[in-house]
Image 1: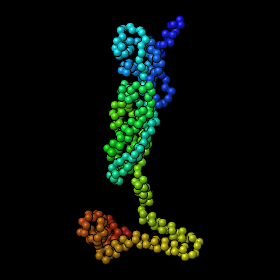
Image 2: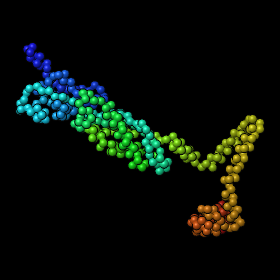
Image 3: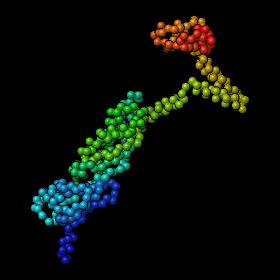
Image 4: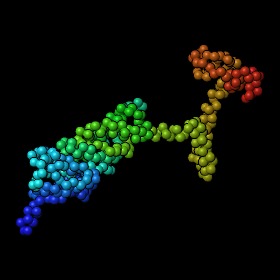
Length: 350
């Protein structure tokens, strides 16, 4: 019994591996100098693949499941070792467990700005960051091309390669999409999908595939962001002329409510009043001039260049611009529907 126990202690009858980390991609089963018993139980869990390697040469591959190792389910190893049918002796081989699960929440970012030609801002530099996930799609290719005969291989071994491939693919996607810089934020999903389509063929050569690619942010240069802020402010303000009048009126109200009776307060009030008067004069100047010119000459202003032309003219003799079908009052110069007998503004007969 002692001899049998000693012999049995030199044999492996159960082969399995459980992953205790989230970063291990490949684990080489530790034989500890022992041989594998013919008929041993091999357990391959979900999201795993077991690969037998004989003297550095890839042999049999086992998908998830439970196996009793026999010559019938190890055809490659049987051929490599020239086993005869019914061979029952222990044997030596390296067993690698490949983790095929998704490796999630991997972060990426541009270490250097990505150059982009924009139709509105010209050449600009973009920075971007986000997350991605990947998995081993072809364990045999991954074994041959990446980890070789390492006893342990983790995510860090391929992370740098994947990130650089991601940045290259993203740069191509942004350039080829020709999306304006101001519209990039509204097209993150489309850009990411396009980038994945270009990136996966490159990773397939390593036995890997990109499962997801998320763009969290694409940041523009500070100068472009300031320009965007100015445009946004102008859009919020709307009519700048009306806004200036409102500001002048507010200044006058504050000056009038000021308790101080000194020259400084008086100066503020006078300055605000002068500014408001000037703006009112400017806003009414054009209409006053056009009314006076209409009263003196009986002509109306061109809708494009403002030159005085005969009422009912289809084209301006000065600039050639086509005129509106509407007419103008011969008294006040206001635009009125063609054929109107009396002006709705001043009541003058046309």
